[in-house]
Length: 365
Image (cartoon, rainbow, N blue to C red; front, side):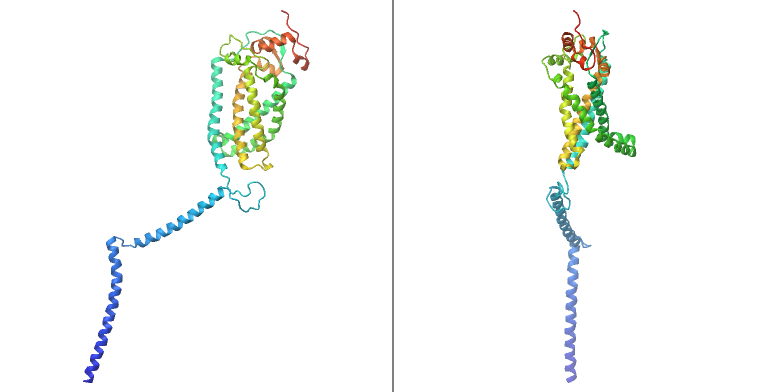
């Protein structure tokens, strides 16, 4: 009887243990089956939901880092002051955003429209010469008038030669990478640019001296007169060569060139001063503005100088003779500068004395 009781007690204990084990197994099974069932129902059989959540977390962290990076560079470009061991202007500016604008203007409108303008002027001169040809002297009188003194001729050629050299080197530096480098090759262009830059810099000051000495004595002769408007209306006589428009010692076209050279030269010289002496403490924005002004004024003066050189050589017979020898034929003076010619005929030519020649006496009538 006692043995049956003990056996019954052990049986109940075993049943309790089995029920406990089944309970644990059931819980574990459900914990595995339910997520699997959810993945089967949603189609996420590879843990995509978990990966998506992780991706969203990573994107949020990356977005925050990207925003911090943008804020940093925004402050840097904005010139936010900070610490720097360098002494001088703009030491607290890590990035000067004006450089982007300067580069866009230099490599955009200046190269594009400047190049088109120079080519257009050159083409117009060729076309005009092919159509109209040279304005020739119908005849020569054999008598000459002193038009330019020795000093005027020397300073003119001195300044003109320097202007041509500066124009060639300046255009090489401005258009070189676009025009010369593809043709010459990078190595050859680099060598040429390395030579052109110091030549351009060293000849700048001698050119300014020559420009001032040439321009100042001609201010009075280059002041506008009432008859200049008639000269302009008649196109300088280049379209109807049977008529000679009125002109004094300097005609209206030459006066326009003079004042373009006068004011354009001021811009060229002042901007060139900033570029030539960068260690004077200029800010980069000042240097960028000076470079743009220098390029525009230089291109404009070169374009107009092409017309000046053409009219002084191929365009008008006898004009170059005056700047070489100082003397012009009387009939040339009468045709191109009739009012000056009449003045010389009445009162003599004061330039004869300064050139070492005898005073020109009026012709007998």
